[in-house]
Length: 279
Length: 172
Image (cartoon, rainbow over all chains, first blue to last red; front, top):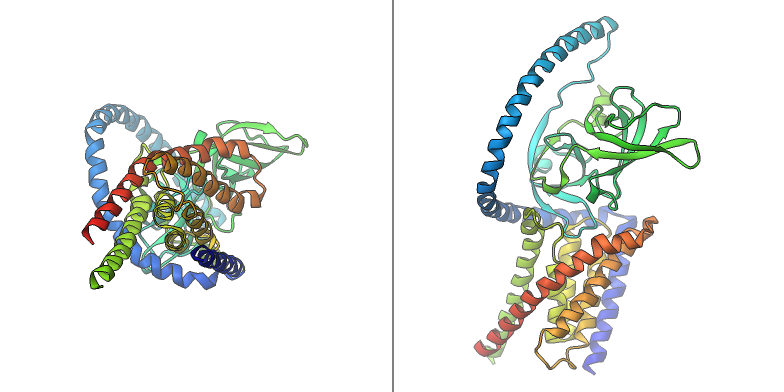
């Protein structure tokens, strides 16, 4: 008898959840309210847990890090010297470019975008998804489709926003697609996330025109034709370019500049691509 | 009478607290640990353990609660997690009556079976549906590590839940 009664319950639960899945699949806005309210309550707690957790993690890592850091300082100092020299050279070139641009009356598309820093507070628990939440939401001016950067380059895009949190889909997620181009020759291509690749620190690079000269080591940046990504944000470097079987296009892989294994802080560009197009 | 009621009430409260704790550990603490390339699914362990310890009904409700937390917190179609967690709670609850021995062997076997079932479900609903057919890769590099991590965690967590249960029975 008791058995019978739980069978009925489970059947009802299954039917209800299938109905809910179907509804929310076709009308996603239905569940947005529930999710926003829930996450708004959860996020401050997570933030607290995170702060406490970070203290312990940092303490454990500190002693190891010190040795590493000392070694790195020496290396970096030598790099600074050579980079500042290169920077000087580039600056003078950039002034020249500015002058020429003024002559041609072109807008400066290499603006430094306004950014806001945010902390990663939670990640999707399954290895299946590469999605994380940050501690800034629409009260901080974050909007859907804003670009998210790590300290080195493109990291992801805001996929949904709540009051005090936002969900970011990183570019290594299986559903991520970014319109990109090579930095020096503006050849269009597509950067696709793929979970079968990201553990080897790779993304897929597709849709390269057959007649273009994209070679291994080319810098890949976001394209100016992308509808969501602002132009000229560094994504990574092209590698292992090959000609597709159909002999019509090339594909390859991309080594991202962002280290996705331990992202703790990110920068969100608080300007949307759609806004820049309005200007 | 009041004592029985108090016992029931405190049990429900305890369960809810444990589930919340597991949820926070899973979403906020595990990702902080750089050594964890993948993490054990604590909510899954709790769901099937409660099914096993207390029967179908509690299994289903624990499943619904864990599933609801995931559905509300993660993106995707609402209800996908409720479905799998409640079914797992129910299925493991059916073994409750035949389960007399308090050894860890059966929970460990169940952890493997449930882990595979859960991950296969996620694969089908999120990847197969988008025509990702590279099953062998997904199996070796995502499903297997996740299942093994969950198995190791089961040994600890199941024993903890079991002891809490005995402690609770003694107190009330």
